[in-house]
Amino acid sequence: MKFDTMLRTFDLSSIPAHVERFERLGIDGLWTFEAEHDPFLPLAVAASRRADLDLGTNISVAFGRSPFSMAQVAWDLQNSSNGKFHLGLGTQVRAHVERRFSMPFDQPAKRLADYIRCLRSIWDTFQKGSRPDYKGEFYQFTLMNPFFNPGAIDNPHIPIWIAGVNTGMCRIAGEVADGFHVHPMHSAGYVREVIRPAISRGASSENRLQEDIDLYAPVFAVTGETQAELDESEAEVRRQISFYASTPNYRAVLDYHDAGGIAKDLSAKARSGEWRQMAELIPDRLIDEFAIVAKPADLAAKLRERYDGLLDRVSLYFPLPRDDSDDVWTDFLTSFRTNSA
Image (cartoon, helix red, strand yellow):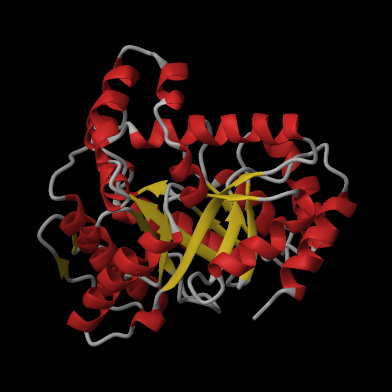
């Protein structure tokens, strides 16, 4: 199992220092996500350094870009990173796609599968010069000339990851993806009993194996040396869980844990901006299910214990703090790898 990290807030000039630190520590991969910043620009800076890190998006919003524009940026990143790029795609939700990106949103699982097939058709033309002839239900790629073709690269297979919570998106991952981003609001039980079986069903429908699809998850951690630090950490995790749980798309996880009854209250409080009151609705048992609770010295071993054999890649939900000494993370990674099954 690999240990990754994420970038959240940054300016592009700081990326080389981040990358140098992550390489020095022995981090395996670096993920960006689409929130305050474009997810691809920092990866372009990292790729230009030929860093010994896997680089990927978790996630970029698929429906915010056409398949061709997505294909171009992914191709360039794959080439400049020596084949270390992973393209993570997500659908977002209808309100954001329609009202923030001004793009269509319907039948998201089917649309995403079509999007991915179109991407691979475009990359096939880039690599082989094949005639464009993709005609899907939502997307098409039927026009090309040499002026727009970047040409073949040394590592043309770009792993595509998709993100999701519900079984429909899990099945799509089994059908067409190389990896699946597990949402941070998850439990080991939900991954084992809901996500993995759904991926397996999708894979079987396309004569693939579940083992062909890697799983990665950022994991909530409640940690600290003192009780005050533990309490502060738990309060932040509780806030994050309440925020995600207020979104209808994520209610399947609550239902799995017989906690669906709080969903409507959370959504109502989110609409009225009652953020503190939302956190108070999260029962303690969900903290234990959705987060690793441990002192810093025990955190890596507990993380490994919970996810060995269940995930292929893991990270903590929050990025590595800048003010933590490298010794802290060197010890963490040593413990994480020492406790390998």
